[in-house]
Image 1 (cartoon, rainbow, N blue to C red):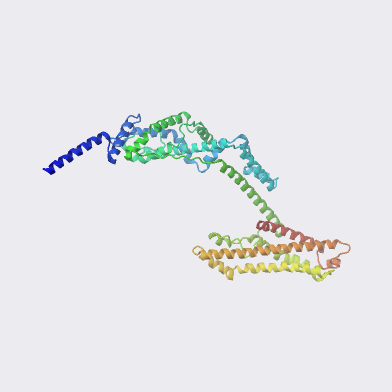
Image 2: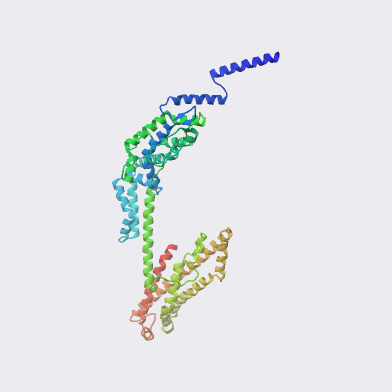
Length: 517
């Protein structure tokens, strides 16, 4: 009996607990969640937008019609955005849309064709100064307010692009499987579907749509699109209708309530984040970089043209290949391993060609004549001329030995070949290659520098000799007239030719040695 009475008391207690819980709420989370969802459902039913049926858990055809209306309006813009190949196209278009007349004129002066024309009549340094001044003038036209307005316009058009690029077709095809992409001649037949099928789509849509500044004027965006395509992509009246519908939906939170009901999460809140990208400063820097790049390209072309002119005047050709191993062709193996390779192949190749083809022939005949048959007033002068002459000849031998060491059957060449095979998997091997390459290139540069210095010294001595030849009473050689009997070409003419060739060659070397310094 006691147990029966206790059971009866417990039943009455549960009854009263349930009764009072229904009146004043409950501590049970599930009960509270159901109560909130039911309240959200009642609030949603009062809305004029009949997009969702709570009892059946269906997304209704009216929801699809809403999205289809937007889809029809934004479809041309969507196609335009999807066709843009350049990722910076919108940034450039936004800034160009906002430029002053003066800035547009300056941009024309930073164009490659304009700079190329300038290069025909002006020095590179003068063009560089003009570019610097034009960039400065361009920048001063941007005050803080204008830059902020441009950045805001870009942010707005990015939100617009994201809104247009939302996958309306993917969403709508769930309501009508026969729908074809951007085919608006087709009359869709939208059916009710399970709401969970569109849950993620709705979340994505409002996370995109609500980032748009819906309360602002959109004429600037529409005019920008018109400037980009030359036609009005979206009529202003149609876009105004879209904006007004979106504002109503945002303010009424219809989509948020639908998401809460579908996901059975009454506390769901959409996180809306918006950022403003600064685009003016990078644009100005890009203009400057592009102009400088064009100038460097012109400078390289001018340098190469001058180099080829000198090569033709010295060798009669630009196709010169005297080295066998320290060559650009050998660099292929290094480049495949992302290594620098041989750095001074061109100048060292020209140096060897000059010493072998010209110095050891034409200069030797002249030098042997003045050193062997010439009567010098002092031994010191003769020795100075002789020392620098033989120093140059010795460097020709050094270049041959240096190049020969790099052949595959010699120590250095074999070392490179072995290390390159291990370079991908062995960091130590890569380190050794870099070190040996550095030493090899330093040796090449050393020979180039020393030989050039000796050639300059030889050229000075030769000029002094030629000046001495013109004196009524020579002070260096006292038998000039006698020496002319031992050569078919007058010794002065031969000396002048040699001096000019050395001068040309030193000018050629300066293009490479100045880069190093």
